[in-house]
Image (tube, rainbow, N blue to C red):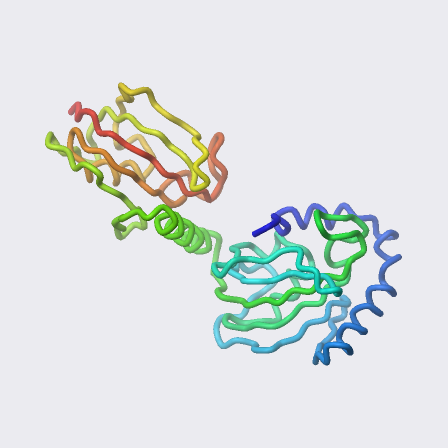
Length: 282
């Protein structure tokens, strides 16, 4: 995405003054009606003032205003200027964490559905500008609802899976995937003792995110630690190597720090580790 609009959207929306929003109600309504007429759209209007066009309602699970979803979209102004656009993977989000026009609008669709949302400013960013979006702007979104998830955990697993496979593709890596969702790359298997999930080991490592920002790194002598006292991705991943082995672990958040994170690691984050298994201590 060009801009991170939706994660902060609810904060921006609730900070708007209601009197300021009202200044744009008539202007926005006229602007939307003119757009619909000019583009010959068959749009429906909700009681909130949102307009939506259902091109395909979809045949899968219905979205609700508190659903976790995966959506592809293009956002633009009524003059056609594009201010944001997802890639083909879409975005993964909870509909309680986006602008009100999305919270309501996406819930008109089922999985596989597509259409348009025409959102007056009071259901978006109100009187406040946001990046390339001027205050008081009507927003139009072409959307496709790809998937509706039952909960945060299933949404994060899908999001992390997409993030990891994209990283592997972009970096031309050859990785193996375990049943748990862990990906690992054995660069050197090693020739010494192979640890178990309960072993105490000495490992040198560098930990970083998929944007390559390093969050932790050991010295060349490594650290000694019990594999039953670390994140699940290490407990499972390190025993794929023998002493002297080197490689990478690509760890989804459910095998790392979960949905809520820890320390400097945000919730739902994929972790990558370059590891060197120096010694199996016991």
